[in-house]
Image (tube, rainbow, N blue to C red):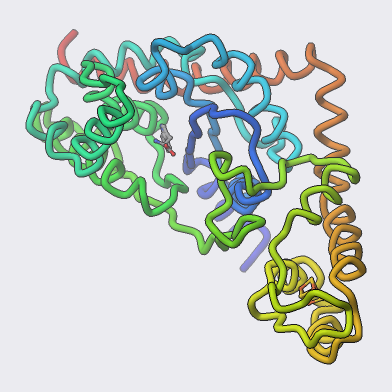
Amino acid sequence: MTTENMATASQAAENKAVLSGMRPTGRLHLGHYSVLENWAALQEQYDAYFFIADYHALTTAFDNSSSIAQNVYDMTLDWLAAGLDPEKSAIFVQSDVRELADLHILFSMITPLSWLERVPTYKDQVNQFAKGGKDIMTYGFLGYPLLMAADILLYRAFGVPVGEDQLPHIEFCRELARRFNHLYQKQVFPEPQALLAKIKQLPGLDGRKMSKSYDNYIVLGADQPEIEKRVRQMVTDPARIRKDDLGHPEVCMVYTYHKIYNSEEQAEIKCECEKGGIGCVACKKRLAAKLNEYMEPIRERREHFAGKPQLVQEILQAGQQKASRKAAETLALVRDAMGM
Ligand code: TRP
Ligand code: SF4
């Protein structure tokens, strides 16, 4: 490839928009990190938009919205800590882009109610919340996939990095894009595709899925004492009481983590554990040291931004401005197509 060709190829990629969002549910943990790493890789190649979905949080937390602002701030810090770069990505808060509300209302005019009612997660979630004594039979919650479609189409994104659980929503979005283009006989929207990355599922400290609700997580940006404390809580081989009991590393979470975060020493640790040559306390110390090393750059970036709330606000503002420019272009196309 000539240099000229290379420039055009990378420009084409740059012009392709990639977008994703997360609901602000509080501080992120190590299990979220590979998702963010994947986003950070995408920002190197594409015109990237990442937003904090505060409206989506409101769909289920409308009666308990007081923590949303704090969660938005924490999530912004976590994203920056994980390496999202405001020079490369537009990092913003969903509700700061006013054009989204316009597009959402225009889309609501062309969205068949039956499409929303048949989204597989919808009835499930309503029932699940009802069991917990909470009524989410709201217009807003029914419209969750529509709002998400507006999120994506507002930037005419071609790719959306999401987990498999979001595939029905992406499908909904594609159908809506097709319906719009067909109704108004204009190719305003590309049909976005889900970008399913091979995200490794990090198990929690107890071997279940790492999750806030199980309290089995290591918070992103944890300091050394916190990491040590969490590693001490990890479940080991129950057959090992004394140091010279022969161990079974394959049933031990500490070993599972050594495999992920300490591949250089994993073989040695397996061998030592099996012949009763290393105690669990020492083994955990070695893991905590490795995890601490791994966390260090993340923690440093988090602390850097946490000490500069003004800078964080400026980053979100710049992100909003960039996002709004693209959104305004799309909205003009939409209004024109609809004859408004
Ligand atoms: N529904 C997504 C989730 O729960 C979050 C989200 C909202 C989103 N809008 C989006 C993801 C647009 C991708 C694109 O994870
Ligand atoms: Fe697990 Fe390490 Fe103890 Fe073996 S020595 S059971 S790998 S903590």
